[in-house]
Amino acid sequence: MSLNLKYAFREGYRGLSRARVATVITVSTVAVTLTLAGLFFFLMVNIGQTLGNLRSRIYLEAFLNDGLAAEAVRSLEEKIRRDSAVESILYISKEAALQRFQEEFGEDIQELIGENPLPASLQIRIHTQKGSVEEIEKIAAAVQIMDGVDEVVYHKNLIRLVREYGLIILAVGLGLFILLLFSSVFLIANTIRLTIHAQTRNIEVMKLVGATKAFIRRPYLIQGFLEGGIGGAIATGILLIAHVFLKSRFPGLFTFSLPVWPLPLVFSLFLGYAGSRWALKYFFKS
Amino acid sequence: MIDIQDVWYLAGGRPILCDIRLKIGRGEFVFVVGPSGAGKSTLLNLVHMAILPTRGRIRVADFDSSGIKPKDIPFLRRKVGMVFQDFKLLEDRDVYENVAFALWATGVPGRKIKKRVFQVLADVGLSHKRYTPIPELSGGEKQRVAMARALANEPFILLADEPTGNLDQESSRELMTLLGRIHRRGTAILMATHKEYEIDRKDARLIRLLEGKILP
Ligand SMILES: Nc1ncnc2c1ncn2[C@@H]1O[C@H](COP(=O)(O)OP(=O)(O)O)[C@@H](O)[C@H]1O
Ligand SMILES: [Mg+2]
Image (cartoon, rainbow over all chains, first blue to last red; front, side, top):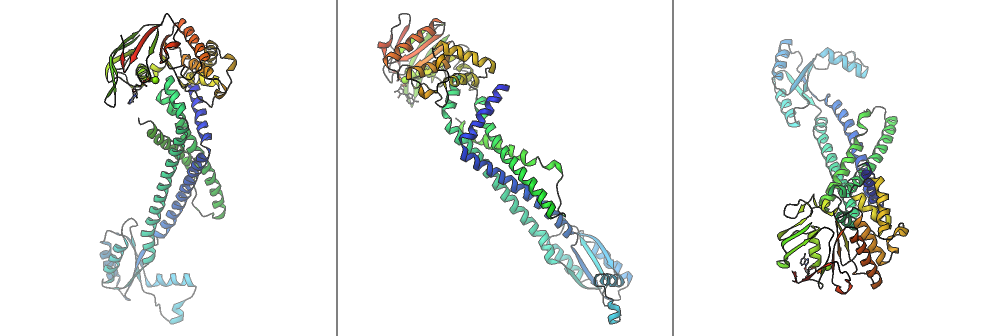
């Protein structure tokens, strides 16, 4: 058995070196695919983190009429809270608003104009998973017409960006990634097909002398693993370098701990296996 | 040991072999002669089960054409050696590697391979050319390499389909002598040829095939 494996490895390697150009193209494609996948994954995680930060800033702000009684504010809060999409409501009094303003701008406008011009408000937070833009608009419209509410404002564009473009970016990236995966598997299968075609005489002889099907197929499976694995190793190397570089340039980036690093390699072996199975199925179907 | 019972083989609706009955015993030497297109190759292909009979059945040692599974065929091939008119050697490897290939391919342990290869190469008289690349050999030498490869796994029968078809007279005679030697060691031989004049063996059985039928 151990010798047979040695033999299978040697034949698998022979396959690689015979179809040299095709092998270089295939290995490069696998490497590029997995590098892009890795970078994309990295990007997505970071975008995800950023979006998460943005999300926590999504809220509606309902400015209240001046001089609204505490009682009226409380009943208003209760009314708004009835919508299940509402997560929390924060009451900001005129005084609190003024204090915030002063913290932000460093000026005392009360002194400047003689009175506090800022209205009291309710900050209404929406559950992040719930609520399309339309739903948020609906809540805004409903709150707008409630007694005691002067005006409702919210970051419409920010909400749109987070809710919609986030998904689009994810979908496009995922589509591209799947496309590249398929081309990798296809190219691996194609290289092995080339090798098999160049070795029809060998296969004929093997059948003649009584080699089992598993024995005949093994070198090609190994060839697939090698092609995938070398591509995966290259991708891992590039990703590690990219990681070090990005971390030094952008220290704020979210980075990965050790356990994810073998993933491209594992994935590449899987690609290699899928590619060789495909080629062998095509060749040995009769 | 080989028992062909009422075998028909049809291809494209046309009978290629008709009602063949033939028994070959242990260590026999059998010639199948007949003109080109008589069905000799088809008969040999049935014996190593590259094709299966349309009707009837063939038994080769423990293998039976009526119940054989594709995964059993490799094990039949190890018991039945084969040589062909066109040698079917691996042109990019040398003599040693061609013979060793058959042993590798059938899972023989590495430490046994070298000894066995040298033994069969000695049997066919090619020890001195063991590291010669195949393209540098003469036709007769190539056929002897093929023979060594066929014998490497110690088959009980050697099937030879026009083994002298690509050889000159001198090499053909040498090859027939070699076949005789292999036969004397106890290996049965089934050889197909259209050159009846090459047959000079008194101890061999001769079967005439014409248009798919065995002549009485
Ligand atoms: N697969 C096939 N399909 C159709 N005809 C075939 C097939 N195999 C062999 N034949 C025909 O069967 C006849 C016998 O062929 P073969 O066994 O090769 O004869 P031989 O070896 O005696 O020259 C030939 O006429 C050949 O054309
Ligand atoms: Mg023939």
